Image 1 (cartoon, helix red, strand yellow):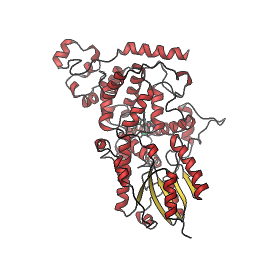
Image 2: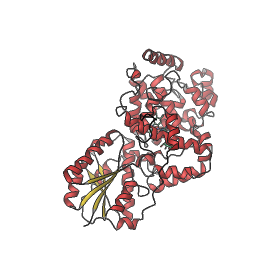
Image 3: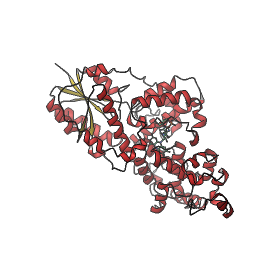
Image 4: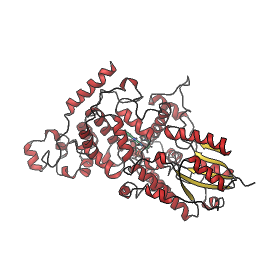
Length: 473
Ligand code: FAD
């Protein structure tokens, strides 16, 4: 009897090294490719992240179509969609998916798998695909979960990582396509892509682009990654996060390509960053409520000030702190933000402005093309000192000295803030002390050409430490 299966694509928009897809192809005579728009997961039309993700889905669909492969776009609750497919193709007996280990996806997957088996007799085959190691695979000797990164990392290094699977050919897939006519909801998909956000994704869609990005990084940037990764003006990082978020490249392909390179500090440092991704994935599974709750219970009641106009200044890059403003411009103009800058702006929002980190997390969710809840919440709780292995609350980044250290010539700042283009770097790094004479000479009048700082960093620092200290007592 013909064995038909569904391959349910989600955050794994690729044919290469896709574990669920491989298994589906091996075990089935016919495979129906679907992507389901789940109305519960739709954010809003302002979300750059959402536009970029669905633009990747559309690109994937169009690329497959060029090879005579159909990816069906369906809308609705997963169970309804699968039930309808089963009605049209009764031989469907199995569904293949790369499962979510955390958050909303985890609950949805568990419920769906149970329901499909009980109600429709469809067997689900979930695969771990998104991370190098599963959340439950790296435990302490006593079986409990690691809370601190460094011991986790040591253990993680010792765990064997899976190799990428061999590529599938288009012909192999075409031979297993199901000819049944299904209604395709491509218009629903297109509605989710706001063309105003095209700046954030237009040049960076698809598996091929992801592979090019990886090859460029490995050939030209990896060896010096340890030196350059903290300098925004050098652009020394991989920019792979957007592709890992959509699954246009697999994490195993990235790890494998890097592992094959000669030993270097750059390689070692990069692999450590990949481990942070697994670490935060694991942390999210053990703290499922961390999107709106501080993991460190001591800091669940920080007396946030939550000043709306200061929040707007932060979002719009008009705080009067050049490194903060340039960073927020990078985020707002490109949909991506350099890691060092994510740390600096997150520290500024939570410590200098005493604005709840969940506000910043939410803003990043809308604006980042690489938004990943585990890494984003992890990063925010790190910066707010509320996470498992966070920056201590009394070590507060000084935005001026951070800029001096990581953007010494103010090259990055000038790129994003044209008003400061003619101001010497040493003046930019002390703009709060810019004299009247300098303002006239360089034609940067504070409050007119460029905002005055919205807070006094030294006072804000003391205020933040006092707020945290009270709770830490
Ligand atoms: P590279 O430096 O080239 O690193 C390679 C890969 O390692 C990244 O693509 C990413 O998958 C992983 N990685 C690197 N650093 C981290 C880290 N600190 N935590 C987890 N994984 C890491 N990363 C996201 O992918 N999505 C997010 O939503 C996200 N939000 C963040 C929010 C804050 C406040 C902070 C401090 C960090 C956040 N990060 C997030 C982590 C990091 O900033 C980005 O992964 C990185 O900047 C992406 O650029 P890249 O691919 O060039 O990174």
